Image 1: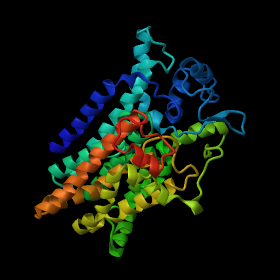
Image 2: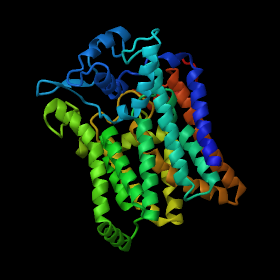
Image 3: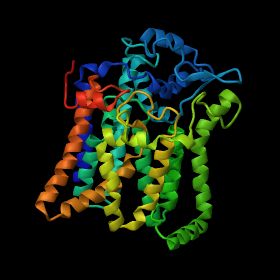
Image 4: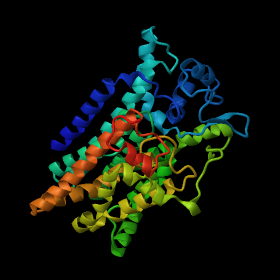
Length: 433
């Protein structure tokens, strides 16, 4: 019950802050979010998924992306245009888009063009909803392995102590709240399947793995979590192989469900290029021989552990997690290490403007697991001085995240280009010269 209250507290606070900000009627469907979202008006209003010609007039009317006629939509070699962004986020925005569209058709005060204010607000509500649902699923997972009190504290830490908070309230409409929900669901249903061996949980997990890939393809290594969950020793690995062989027919069905979801993205590529597999990020890519893992984790520009220090606390929590249940280690570690390496091998490893390492918002459900183990051990510490120091450290990191997010929201903490000198100059300030 406490963990559920923590989730609803997060939702209430986020709604309250968002609708009490003067800026809540700002334009949110711009930059990357405009690319994620563009599938919906293109398909359902303008019937123009091949060229996105409608966007030029929309952009001029609303001034979404300056002089960019088609943000993220490029001419392909086959005579059409392709949206470089994955289609998954638009699938999660679809119910909210439909609500806004129906409202605008009856309320003639707003244009039913897919971009007027009701559409903007519902896209934000979409981010709030999926972040809330992701925390709800994560809470259900945590109480399977920890006390309700530990789960509640962990939910509050993940919700208010990481940049999930920023991308729920201050920079909504990105793909990250959706991916956060997806990864939490893969973790929850994978755990349920191995615990019960009920096929429906396997099928649901496979569907969510498909959604992970069509929402942010970079998260494809989530399959490592599904394969190696609760595997620690060589004997565990042999038992897992035997289990897969025993359930091979059901695994084939799960794989078909995965392909069915992936087919949504593949169908779009085929529709615009004639190819089922197409690399849409023209001029962008990975350099795996020159990954910027250290900068991605510790740099003043966008370091994950600098701007989300509670993530480092979570990583340290793998030690008490190992002591609690060693079988919980391999799957999460394989996924986290692989995704960190891949994320920071992108040529623009800082991922443009934003607060902290925004691609790693997606993996926070995996950080919550060792963090819960650490909090569980913290509660049991008998030394009052040590206990107080560690508790104050965690609370301090949560408050730091809340404060720096606010700095970011009022443009004191810039979205990019930060260095150590500037960081310490603005540290703790709400105004600066």
